Length: 334
Image (cartoon, rainbow, N blue to C red; front, side):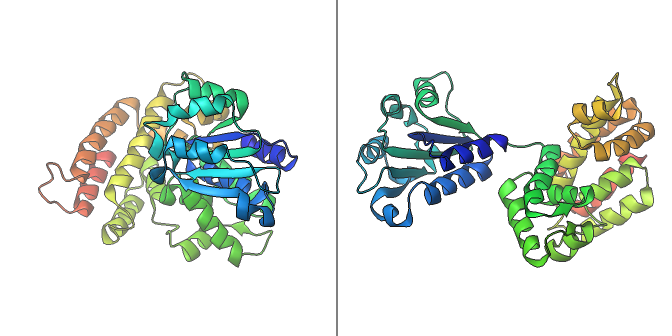
């Protein structure tokens, strides 16, 4: 996020590079940077003759180079944006010759999503020398929670830790999805408001009481009554609560518990860092570790591997997922 802010600041100051290669598994900032260049470098009047958007599946490297070597008309720059450039992955290295001596008046932007170019090869080295290579990596769950807070702060909104975790549990770590939901909430909430679990439940449709976050907490507390209440809700709403997702999240939770048991330093700061979780949730892991010794955790991880396969339809003899989930909970809480 800080690197993105610096790139934006440089462009605003007129420090514009001839090539921006935007790559990586997280598309959110690739799109944001590309959109910023598309709407900022040229004035509206200049864009008609000097801005071109190409798509990787429709062009070749030669087409891109030919377009990039054109001179701008009545403007200091022309902007060439190649979206879905990852579709050119087999031939992308052919761009290295142009990257070694790019047209100074052209701003070439390549959106290379979900992939990365080889940093040992000529293209990467040439762009690093002449332009910008921005790598957008996927964030861990705990990093996404922090990202949500940081993205809301400049707009004068806050969010409770539980509400942020609910968004991550339900929407995953794809920043674009989360941002879309946050933008919807900002339409209906006054600046200065805090986004709470109740607001999430009412406006996004995620139950504040019956979700994977609460299931994990109930299991950690060995609260059988709450655990089976949530499982019953999941059984009645399987489309919104697929078992495969629940098993994956629980596998991650108990794998983290194994790590916790092996830590020499169990201070909150050390635990949060080792498990890659928010400090807000450390106490949940401390409680769970008391309730599940290391040997028991190892057995549960084995059960989760078995039920992960069953949730995908292997060796389950068409057993309803709700019944499989109940069986799994019984084994965990035994």
